[in-house]
Length: 283
Figure 1 (cartoon, rainbow, N blue to C red):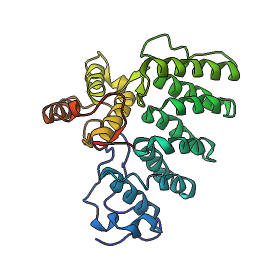
Figure 2: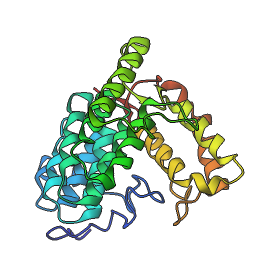
Figure 3: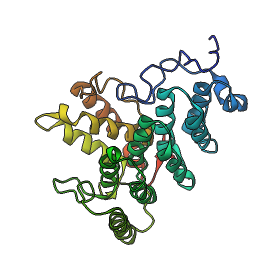
């Protein structure tokens, strides 16, 4: 396999990597050399990102923080987006707070990706950090921030207090802190939340199936894609083909993917409220 030059995207990485049609699946088998120490400091940032990802998929989380530097240094917006999402899914709890640095990124789309990726972490402290960032964000970004804070902390219903709040910035942060305190009191050491409750792989699969059974599931494509991203991160199971180029669900593919996961027994092995990456418990 010819080695890519500069920051050229390698052939084993799809143009749709980390997007709704492809997820984390590689287009071709990555070279074994990506697991070498040299790949972690490669001058090609795509190669470096792939190396960090493969190490984490194998249960070695020691290098995930390198993704933050890649996000700051990369000129390619797609590469930045990939690094943001992989960091959110793979980072140990001890370094998840580094995602707040990306809230301040100079590029609008990268900031939006970081806000969206916050929900992939399921982390209560990051929900508070994102709420605090609202006061510094441009007005055009505030609704995105509130939506993602709400996704972590509030049950899925029509009346979403934190998504639709008219509170001033200080009062909004206090309300978010109150919600987080309530969840921590009730669930104690739980680290992974979505919609105000501990999240597990079984729950994610059930929610995807429920959304697909609605009258117009194509309207839920974005949410289904995010749930598949979480499920792939937790289990390592690919969802290639489950959503089309318009990010609309492909029902036969989704049914087959969920049935395969259920039959594998993987879902039952993952404890609700605990962060996993490719079946490995996140430290």
